[in-house]
Length: 248
Image 1 (spheres, helix red, strand yellow):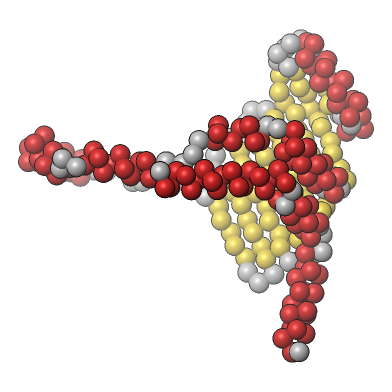
Image 2: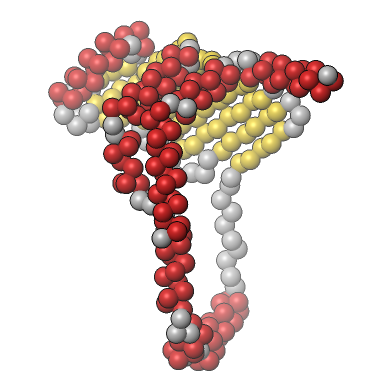
């Protein structure tokens, strides 16, 4: 009886945590340089994460949790330049090594069975090509299940703010007009500060979106998608192909 009570309390705590909303904000700058950054907060103090990336630079991310803080910022560290003595010593060692090592030594080290062993290793590591599963991906049943899952996620995402600012121009004027018409038809209130360049190609715009969602609902939608018949059929086919590749 005590075990049942403990499991019920544990399940209630997990369900309570999963029902805490996750607020998010995403900013994408399409221009020079390309930049993307995102922030997410789970509850008030349960978790707080941020991530940013600028084209040509290392990504930066930071994570705060209620019990610890993790800061991970990748920085490029340049190795120290070797001195003249170190360069001369390295060249001498390479020259001595090249004098000791001959082509016959390489063949003797590899052995007659080396090509066969390498081919066996490559065949063992080889995975079934993705193109074998394209027919399973691009069929009506799977696409219907996928877009149902995607529409549920987008509907649950509760995007409270979505804005586009700056200026954009596609290579052809009619393409820019089609983009402008589509944006004004889908989200007219979000493109009031966005300008369109019909004369030349130009990309200097920023997309901002923010909202909130619930992890419990995301898990529910994802579990329903994973348990659908098209996905189960795809997993079965993938397992069968892997088994066939392993056993030859």
